[in-house]
Length: 211
Image 1 (cartoon, rainbow, N blue to C red):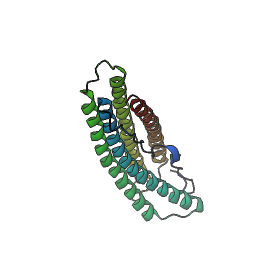
Image 2: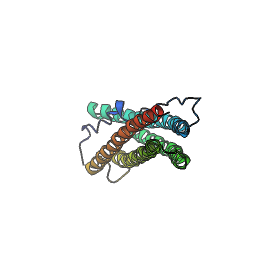
Image 3: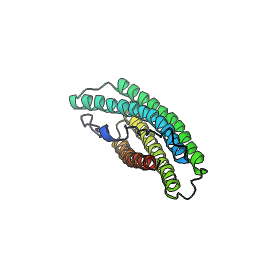
Image 4: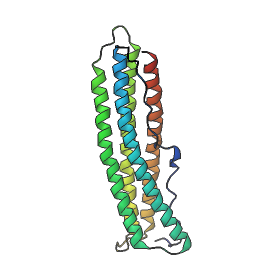
């Protein structure tokens, strides 16, 4: 068991981690080439990703507030277990909402792949390759963000047990360690998603230049 005065953990370096949204690009209205269709489909995905990123930000901000409250109470030598347990339960709800929002993003990712894979580009081999690459990068982003959400589910569960006054392992340091490990894995997945999103934006710009 660990002493109450020990600070729990500082949650996030989240300012740059996956709270951003993919940027839309502008197809040329006079261009009827299938490249324009790919760009339009990408913009639809980017809109879905922007909505998703908003829910992720809500979830991460909420968890960070809970950790700030815990750290403040722990460092001052006083805490309200009931309030902390309620906060953790609320965190769990926002993490679940993150998961629900991810379903819509996965649908948008699958739609982009299916809608663009059958397009014909004649002798142009570069454009379909870029479209396929874009679909792969979207999938990597989707999977990475899903992994992050699942790791935060674990984080929330361990943290809830650690702070549950009625639980036999209340303040058991092994739970604190497990929560920290889950948080580390979640942040690594967010970093992977951040890289994927940068790649998505760069590939979309290459496609726009080929119109």
